[in-house]
Length: 352
Ligand SMILES: Nc1nc2c(ncn2[C@@H]2O[C@H](COP(=O)(O)OP(=O)(O)O)[C@@H](O)[C@H]2O)c(=O)[nH]1
Ligand SMILES: [Mg+2]
Image (cartoon, rainbow, N blue to C red; front, side, top):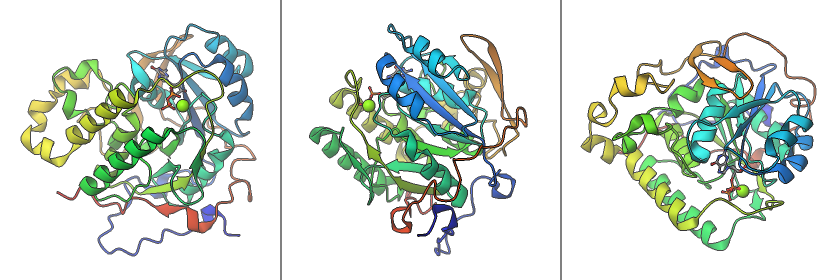
């Protein structure tokens, strides 16, 4: 069987642009993997999820949204080494943004805390990134993926919205609103550009949005930034305890608004200057327009966020250079049939 990291980049399209990040500077041999977990009242689920995390992770960043149950205590008990970050705004989008910026690894993985994302799949994502992807995007609908959690209306909505994104941005995604994704940290600036849609009050918004449109923002930005996106088939398990915080209509509309707000048509209508006053954004958001397009790993992202236990200076520097321990990229740990890791985005920008 071919290992995922043995799959060469098989993009034969002459128009395919070069990698976004400086691949030569990426830590391909022993990437430090940060797992970012947003939590909102997930104590009972965390007690299942955290023990299932694979060995060899560089760090686990838990971003809590003000849980009123024992989420924080459970996380502390099961993962004394985790970094607890308190989100500054509302919603999953804000939580992920805060967590991703706080993470210090070479590779950042987003993982839901409700038990639906199987931590055992993390090596697959890492393998795809090491093999050549900038972004390893989980897909429940790629060959080899699946879901025991998604409802029929959500599945239909996801498909419609995914088709819309594909037609606007020239991608060939099979899944749009899925929370299990990973990317090289050097792609963060391309993914966290200010949101033109919410320019009226940019300081109030995280660049990834507030709610469940966050995955759409990431996927659309990856296409706009000409990042190399590969889909990794993923099986979504059933949420173990509790109920989803997502509301199909409300959050579906937010996704539609995001697709429109990020589109070239919208950008053409509202100039970037009008849409995102640079000075209003620069102080609040580390991924300001002034940020370099593709800083390499080791470049300071340059801000500090409130962490419950400490204030962390956010750098992706060579600090605490802990190698990825054994397990994550051990031969066989991430076997993925070659047919099921595919290139989701041809790396081209938007069509129009
Ligand atoms: N920190 C934080 N996490 C959130 C928030 N909303 C949802 N989450 C987390 O995001 C993940 C996905 O949320 P979930 O309700 O399962 O949505 P679904 O998977 O789309 O049905 C879970 O780990 C939630 O605990 C929030 O406002 N803040
Ligand atoms: Mg869920």
